Structures are given as structure tokens and as C-alpha cells.
Amino acid sequence: MNRLLVCDGQQWADQTPLTYDGQEWYRAAPLYWDGAAWMAAAPVPRRFPGFIAGTSGTAGAADVASLPVPAGVRTNDLVVSLCVQQSADADEPQLLAPAGVLSTRYTLRGSGIGLHTAVWPWDPHRGTRATWAAPGGGHTALANLVYRHASIEDLTLTPVDGVTEHSAVTEVPLPASENHTVLYAVLAVSSSLTGAVWPQEVTGRVQLLGEFGEHHISLMTADTPGGLPAPGALRLDATVDAACAVITIPGHTDGLPTWVLGDPDSSVLGETTYLG
Image (cartoon, rainbow, N blue to C red; front, side, top):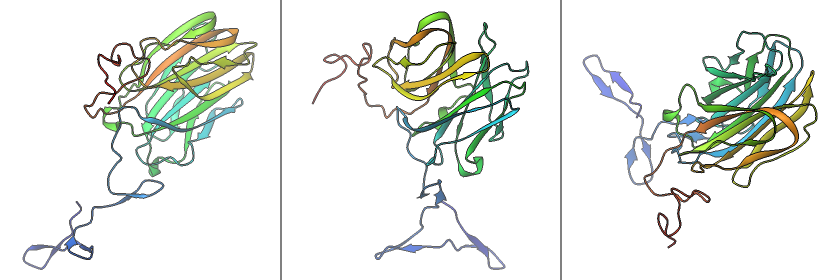
């Protein structure tokens, strides 16, 4: 509660404005603009934050690449920004805007193509674009995904839980998901990839299929509620070298049991879950 204190020359007096609701006067809760509406408090985090929207795009041989975040983003929405760079310098690309956000990098051993990630809670002063410094003159692919009702307090500095790499495969196995919403980001390098199919347990999101320089570089994303020990594999129509990054979108449990369809450990009908 924001209080207004005024000194009358001898002491401080409470002069906080009051609001009358027709029956009584009360101190109204302070409001802030979240980009779409006036809010008195941040939204309550949920166990499985939901996907709102995504954007994607490519940049040619440039040292700076920029992509807008999805329209409709609101304060405390979680933005996941992905940057795929070909023929990069040894220096790690940096996220220029918004400032102060750390990024992580993984480089495919065979092709040297880098997958860079950054995650941050959005608010109006962070702006409406993610801008990467991508030195080296290579080609760059970008994607921004927005999730709502994430637990900002549980966001770590390194949100990538792990990365697996695969050579000369037509299927990319997806690692187990745990606890909250899990985002899979798959980077594939091939000369002939034109399509991909996610397993039933996950939902495809932003996808980029295209040719950049000497390689066909594809960036594909999907998410699922946590709890699946082995959600399956991403099936491809060509042989690829690939990397799969696992990113947790942290939520907050209310202490009540949640049934996740397909979770054989925590959601067994008749044992841990009862229909009422």
C-alpha cells in the first residue's frame, strides 16, 4: 500500500487518498499498467504456465538481428528468446535488448552452428523487441515465445536444463519432462529437411524451416505439461544432425494433485487420481 505522508510543521500526517464505494471510505490498492490493463497485483502463478503466442524470423549476414516479441505480451509474462547462428565467431553472441538479461549457448560439434537462449519476465520498460549481437557475418534465425502465469520467483539464471546432440538421425528423442511446463527447442541441420511431426504428448509451437548459407537450418519448438518420463521423439522426413534443448517454464503448485494425461508415475487413475 502506497501511503502519502504530509508534514504540518510538527509531525507527519497521513494524507493517503481514500475511495468511497457508496458505503464506506477505503484506501484503494495501488495500480500499475501491465501493457493491456491496470493491475493491482501480479497474476497468481500456476503449476503449468500457458503458451500465449510466438514470433519467428530470419536475418541475413548481419552483425545485429532483431525480432519483436508477440503482440499482447503483458507484465510478468515470461519471454523465451532463441537465436540460431551460422558461422559464428568464437565470441558468444550477446542479447543487446533488453539489457541485463543473461544468455546461454550450445554449439553443434559437427557444423559449429550455435543455439542461444535467453529467458526473462517482460514489463513495458523492457521494450517490444529482442535484439541480438551476432558477430561473424553468418545467417541467423530467431524465435520469441511468451508464457503466462509463470513463477518469476523460481526463474533461474540458466533456464536450459540440458541439451542432447544427435548425428545422422531421422528421429530426435525428447528428454523426460518434470514438474512444470517444459519447452523443447530442436535445432536440425540437413540439406533436405522439409517437415517434422511431434509426438502426441507434446504441442508444436513456433517452427522455422529454411536454408541458410551452406546448410538447411531448422528450428522447431514444442511444449508439454511436466511429468512425462519419455514423451517420444520428433520424427523428421530427412536425416539430420540435431540438438534438443530442454527449457523449464517454472510454475507454482497450489498443493492440490494434478492429473497429467500420460504420466505413469504421478497420475495413475485409481491409485493417485480419483474421478468425482
